[in-house]
Length: 121
Image 1 (cartoon, rainbow, N blue to C red):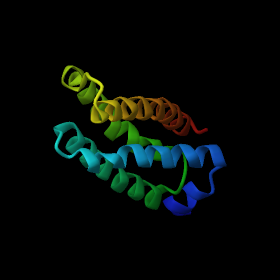
Image 2 (image 1 turned 45 degrees about the vertical axis):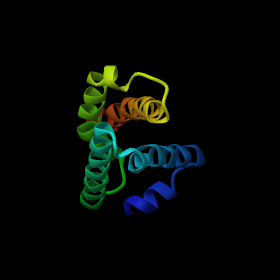
Image 3 (image 1 turned 120 degrees about the horizontal axis):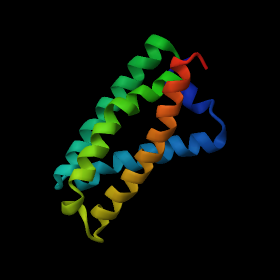
Image 4 (image 1 turned 45 degrees about the horizontal axis):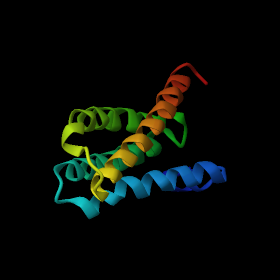
């Protein structure tokens, strides 16, 4: 099963969540005047390639969360360190906060998924 067909086979609520993450992360293209958006877009592209490779090598399973663990953990650490420069209420600052929370929720799920995969579940 390819990555795309695996995503499309997910239950509705998971499909909505995946597409939400895609929209929130891809929105970086609208804010490229900010260094944070450039970093987010770069990480997002690396994540897409890594997830595709993992799916091709290992199939569509819980191990795919490893791509988020590897890419989004350092991204969120970076964004947390820049929170002083991100503070405010402009559209870009609100987007970064929404992205941070979205990716953090995903990371919690991904750490659990990767752990379960490694434990044989």
